Structure formats: structure tokens, C-alpha cells
Length: 130
Image 1: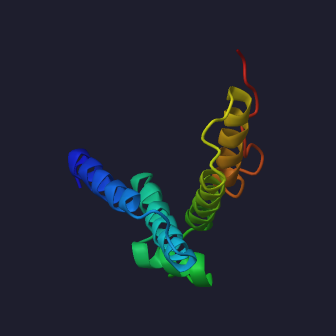
Image 2: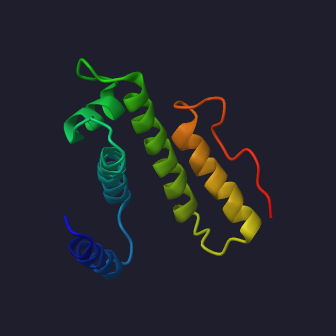
Image 3: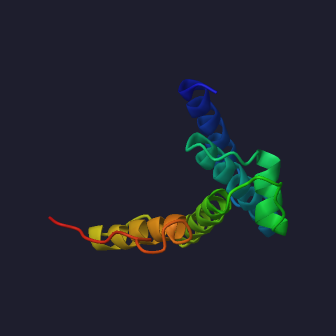
């Protein structure tokens, strides 16, 4: 999918969401579920992960995987899924107005979730110089 097409789809989806004042709890859960798996698959695929969409879904839901998949690929999926959940928690708390220190904490938490299983020695930012 080309970037322009993706941006148009995002705009269409945003318009649909804005048209609905509030989703029901079941709708939120289904929305979260769908996008957590899809975004995990898409992001990891771009980075060279060989898990298919179905394999990603089965791994995240059931802990099942096909033969020949590396532990690192599975850890990438787990980490991305955790980071996605953190992002949703932040968004649901309406934490849009964050100051720079909060933003750094959020980014560090997301980074740690993405990499803690892949590189346990350095799962977050190790040093920041300003």
C-alpha cells in the first residue's frame, strides 16, 4: 500500500470514529484487538520479521507458532504488542497534554517494552545528553 493510500485510509477511519461519539466497550475491545495484531504484524514485517499475519495472531493469542520461527521474532511480536497496549492506556487516559519529562518517560517505556525481550541488557534508553 502506498503512503498516500494509507494516509487516505487513516483519514477515512478517523472520520468514521469522530462521527461516533463514543464506542461501546465491546467495540473498543474489538478495535484494540484488531489494531494491536495488525500493527504488530505490519511493524515487525517492515523490519524483516518473517511471521505472517496469521502466525502473529496465533502467537499473541495462543502462544502457538510455526516451526522455523526464531525466538527473536517471537520476542519482537511480544514487545510490540506490549508497547501498543501502553500506548492505548496513555491515549485512553487522555494524556495528550504532556510535558517534555512525561514524554521522555512515555518514550522510554515504549522502547523498553519493544526491546526488553530482544536485548535485555539495554531495553531502554541508557544515556541522554542535552
